[in-house]
Length: 226
Image 1 (cartoon, rainbow, N blue to C red):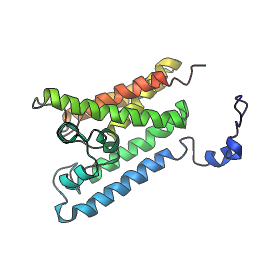
Image 2 (spheres, rainbow, N blue to C red; image 1 turned 90 degrees about the vertical axis):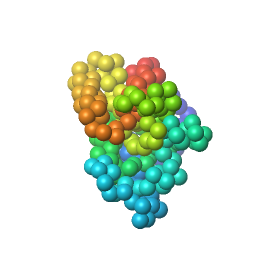
Image 3 (tube, rainbow, N blue to C red; image 1 turned 60 degrees about the vertical axis):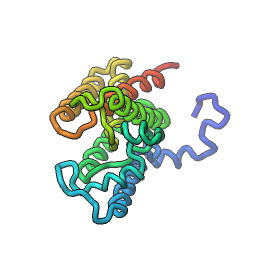
Image 4 (cartoon, rainbow, N blue to C red; image 1 turned 120 degrees about the vertical axis):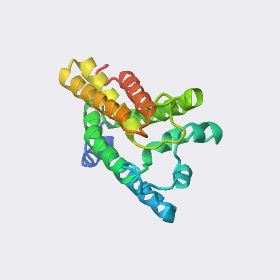
């Protein structure tokens, strides 16, 4: 409250905002917003809901995903829907897909907000997601058709911004000298990265781009700088 600003207590609203948690309610917004969009897509898909595959159980139809803002090489470069790099992180293609991603958001979001502050965490999450889907779309354009390395023609999920949170936490651990934070973030990133190469249908370019975007934004928004 003594930071030298004109209204350091936010005109008396700071205590009210603190009740939302150290993430200022962003993590619940992502969880409930993504869940609401998932239910809306299922309702819109109707009889075209897909039921096959581990991560495609109770999956919205491809047309519905496209209309709601799925990203990838096809939407971005063939349909000029460049804005989907921002929307795709809020969409999911199956019940287990959204369940696992929201568990990771619930785990990593508050931790990142604790280190960087709520505002910086939101910026990291958003930019990392956009960087991940942009990387996947560009890889599809340049390397499309090459297994594993070819990017995704069609992609959704919060895993790109999740990897961004891991990248930011890894930078913070390195910057602060905390081997615990750095080691935990690196261990999670490696575990999820290996999982991505083992499981079919995982967008590894989105993960790598999200991690790089989160690490870079963590460096730019370094909370330890004066």
